Length: 510
Picture 1 (cartoon, rainbow, N blue to C red):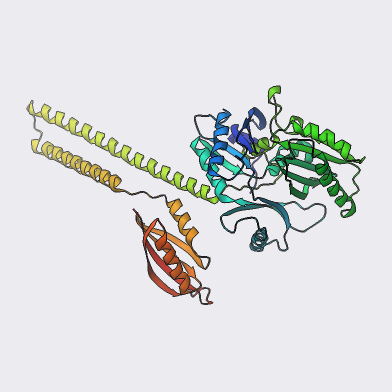
Picture 2 (tube, rainbow, N blue to C red):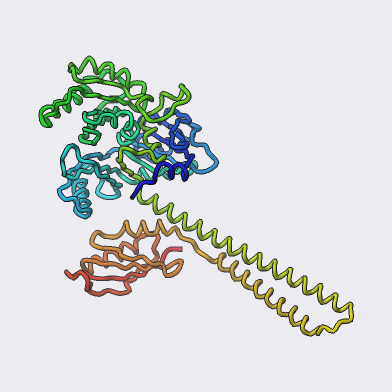
């Protein structure tokens, strides 16, 4: 898709705000940014302590995160606020893959097969996203950055934030947000050199290398201790950095004279300076330059000095919502369920607005008829009091016609009231999600059609009749379905191979 020009983008979006949230073990960093005429500035930031286990996947822990963001005061607006979030979940996958075939279908199959090999991820209910990476040097091989995580906790915390009028539009890995935050001032100026970014976040270390502005290398390492909050484990950090530099010197035959290395820490960004200073004593190399990432490395205007010590990860995820994404790296792990719920909600709002417009037009029509009737009545009374050659029978017929139309409109209003009173509403997004969840893997659903408010017809293909019977049994056992009956089956003529077309009629529970 072609990006709009700078002038057009400013004209359409001169002023916009966004909230960035970085959830770590024990703390939540919140940053509020605003974009005004193309310039991004920080409104405020906050770091709130939470329970030590709040980074886990439990519902109560996720609720405590939403409560902490509310306490920050940065998201307390009358209207809904857009937010982006980095949430540490276990297990989580972030990996660079080399594609053997660049065609979309082959790429998707290859990525799904690779994710299945990541044994710690659940077999079902996974949210996965990927983006293409620009190849380093003259390489023509297609490379992608893939992210995956369990979908259920992501959906739960998004719903918790919506209760506080905070709409989460983006959930991404923390290192992706850090890359976006410092891309313009750290990575982009290094046109012909290597740049290393190191993110220390709780007990995780993410190390990435950009070669000539292109994302070339990624390593994620999980430790048994909090590596971001103490200088006691600087040796473990130095060992990982040194091994990557050796890899480039031996395997990539790198001829770079200097290695600029930038360190960032979460949740306490101030620890980065102390760790960077300690690393200089552990890495006995002449060709490295170690710096801690601070406000000067991020393309954000800081007018108040008290706002300079903000989280670069939280700022990076908020910058994506403000259309600041020069890095071109996009990973969004927001569950598909949330998209369906919001789509259904928007459709319901449209229906409510249409009903309101119809009711307004009816009321206006009634008012018009009443005014017309009153006008005619007054005219008849005036004619009765004066001698006139006007035919009184015509006036009486006109009045009778108006009275008939008024009675007809009153009847239409009563019918509308009866319809709205008897209407039964279902959360169709939830119904479709549950029907798709219980479908066996040997069944393909091709069409879902609501005959009325309580009847749904499901059509699709199956590999055999046993699969169809299994699907019917699962539907019958589902809480939202009161009964399921097979309406029709026949051999599929399009694909062959013994595939069977089926049609099932389900009655939904009231």
